[in-house]
Length: 454
Image (spheres, rainbow, N blue to C red):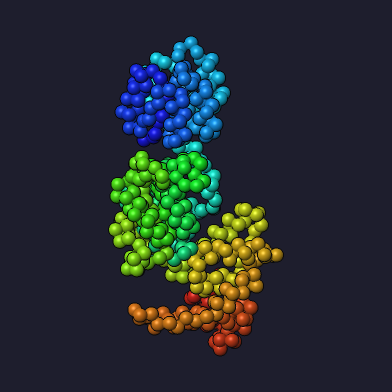
């Protein structure tokens, strides 16, 4: 549905066009002449304007000039009588989007209006995409761990539905990648995927970004702006860090989830959209509800289908594959090949990764940029990472722990520390640990600390 302004001083023609467009579901405003039409446009900034060329008080060419002066992006279609095509061509040169020659059948009018509205939507989507920073997302999630296989299985089962999805997990675990995978495997894949970072926008700005605003709604609103929900119509909207949305915006978001309708900021016209909502957070929303910072009714609307992403430290077997993926990507960009030493790989596998996959990518890119050779070894890794890797975590969780698992974890970390201090020399590592070299080889293989000989 769009807001369309008809400027026509012939009552029969004006009413006929109005009825055709009303039956198509549009919000129609009418003006009985050129001057009234220009005034209406400047007050309401409709999506599309249809104006007759021949009018007594102000002809269509003057109307076109005035509207284009008010908004250079205005979409205007002119109505011309048979035999005055030259005038219509002149109007096109002045910026008219299209023209239609009367008399015309209703179907032709509907086709031309729908085409114009498709162009308007495409322009808005392209402008949005240009404003977004493009990132290099892998086509698939990387890894073979049982935890990741479970996530991929969930994506396959959930993607074909229209249910709202709430993705939880620590920062850097790949929540946006899961959202994109859900969209790519859904029936909406050919429609827009629109992301909103709810933590990066102030309250007033966030409301305008989500729902759009009308011209003059606030200082600086010099033109109507479509919101992200409008841009995502037919597709998917991804609300990243949804736990950061302020209470006043939560109420409006709840209405969209319930009724799929809203009003732009400063507007009175109700807009309906068909979108799938995927949200993500690294917060405990139930705790936020208990503290009065998040609406429980909104939570249950978002939490139809939950997906929880485990931290990287809980799927260490995926780390080598992730490292290979990142290094291959860096090689494609720069053309400079790089291999990772077994010692560096062991250190990266043993690190706790509080920043998860994002931190791993940053560490590898930093090392890649600063490295002078083709081998990423221990010396190339950040000092803080190597020091923190020597830490042994002996905290006892409330749920208890397997003693054998804890002892193996401690043994692995001690071997890693000795291996690093020995510079990767296995005989020296065995001496530091007070064990035979043959026993060290067994343990290195058991814990996956080295991939081949030094």
